Image (cartoon, rainbow, N blue to C red; front, side, top):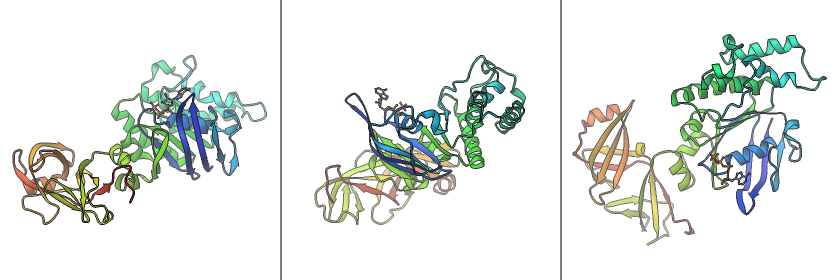
Length: 357
Ligand code: ATP
C-alpha cells in the first residue's frame, strides 16, 4: 500500500504542531519519523492512523483519498511504546483478539484463528509462552506480543510509535533487527516514530527528519547522514564539529584554518559555519598542506573498532572531536598531550539563516 501525505497541517489551539507536511511512501517501505521531542512525529502518525484529523491537506492510501475515513476502516495496525496488552488475557488471547472481534462475515473459524496465532507466535519466538499473562513476560517479550497482535489482522499499513522506547539498549537492538526481518518478510508499508538517530539509521529504508512541525529532510539513512541539507539535520544525526568563521575569496577563515568553499564564492565578509563529522577529520604528525591546523590530543577513548580523539586547537583553544580507526591510532601511536595536525577531508558550509546566495 502506498501512502501519500499531501500538504498536511495541524494546530492545537494557537500552536502549530504540523506545517505543510508532504511525504510519499512506497509500498513495502519501512520509514522512520525521526526528530526531537515535540517535533510533531506522533501527531503525524495519529493523522495517518485516522485518530486525529488534519486541519488542511489530505492522506491517500494507494491513490485513494482516505482523509475522512475512520481509523477502523483504514486497515492500519498499531504498536505503541507502552505495549498496551490486555492484562486479563493470555498471550494467545491477546494476539487472537483482533481476529475474534471481526464482523461475523470476515471472522475466520476458530481453527484458522488458532493456526494463525500459533504461526505468529512462532514467528516472534514466543511459541512456548502462549498461555502466559502479560505480567509474566519481560518488556521485550511484551513488545513482541504487541507486534504479533498488530500483524494478526494483516494490516496494510503498520504504524509504530516509539515501539522500543521503554526497553533497555540491548533488547532494543535485538528487537529492531527483528522488526527489520519481520518487515522484510511481510512487506507491509510501515512507519515508526523514534527520537533515536541510531535506531532510524539502523532499521529504516527512508528517514524523515522532523523539527518544529516541519520536515527538514527526507532520504535514505546514508543520504541523511552523509549529506545533511540543513544544520539541524547535521547536528541531530550524529556528532559534528562546527567551525564558525568568515567567508573570504572562496574560503572560510576560522583562526588559522582556511577552508576552501567553492560553492560560496561571492560572499566576502559574511559569517558562515563549516560542519565536519568526527570521522571526516584526518589526524597526522606532519602538516598536511592547506586546510590544516595544529591541535593537542586531550583525551583518547577507545570504542570498539574506532578511537575517539578529543583535541584542543592550538589557534582557538576550541575542542574538536575526531574519530579514527584503531589501525590508524596504532600507526600514529597517539598519546595524550601530543601535538598533531588535523585536516577536514569532507565538510559542508552553511551560511547564516538569513543569508541569500
Ligand atoms: P515526543 O517525541 O515527545 O512524543 P513528538 O515529536 O511525537 O514528541 P507530538 O506528540 O506530535 O511530538 O507533539 C507535537 C507538539 O504538539 C507538542 O508541542 C505537543 O505538546 C503538541 N500537542 C500534541 N497533541 C496535542 C493536543 N492534543 N493538544 C495540544 N497540544 C498537543
